[in-house]
Amino acid sequence: MDTFQKEIQCVLCPEIFEPVIEPGEDKNSYEIYCSSCSNYNHIARANPVRVAFREVLGLKKDALALALQSVLALCHCGGEFNHDAGKRCPNCLYKIEREARKAGSDMENEFQCPWNMDELKKYEAKLFEFIFQKVESKGESLKGLIERFESGEMDPGTYMEELDSLRFRESTQISVIQAWAMILGPDIAFRAAEEHELVEQYGTRILVSIADALEISAGKSALATLTTEMKNWDGSVERELNTFIAKIGGGF
Image (tube, rainbow, N blue to C red; front, side):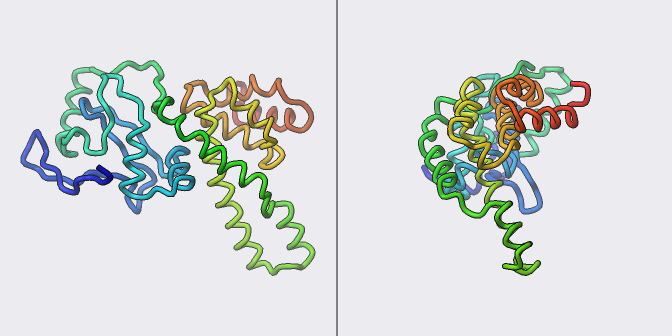
């Protein structure tokens, strides 16, 4: 099966519904529900795994949704997360959620990675290849773009267009790096970034992005991770991380 059934008969009521497989045009995210209970995974449009599957594997629509579904971890209750929500319509799911809240039957609060890492690791090589093709090709850097503008090689309108394009490309590349970092895990991700000179390519912000990704996959706050990681760097990188932590973390 490489697609979704477009019309599903709810198993709890007469309603026929269409499964949601991606964010709506005016939405930045959507939910994939457990097939057994009312728990769900919140999938943002910019989720690193979603972006990586779309950009690296070229998946769209049904194929993208199916791939995401295949790498989600099991629910706390043991059920699987499926876009058809166990063939339960949105109205019935709402009623189940409401009753669960009334009964105080929240699932365990301890952290659980939303992704099945054994499944996600199958894509590590493809993500690695994508990332380092981009690093090796170098391409236009922000510094180079500014220099070209200041030297008069391009007019303001072209500069703004090129700047927007650069930001979009780098945003995509950083999302793929985040997905790769989640696969590597907190013990390896930063050392791999150091080994492959990702800070030289993207600046200190790539370490912040990796820490954000590891918060998703490992549950430790990004600020706590960066506070520990800062000790492994010196010079401008250490100073920039320290400034970031002081500014964002306050008294952290």
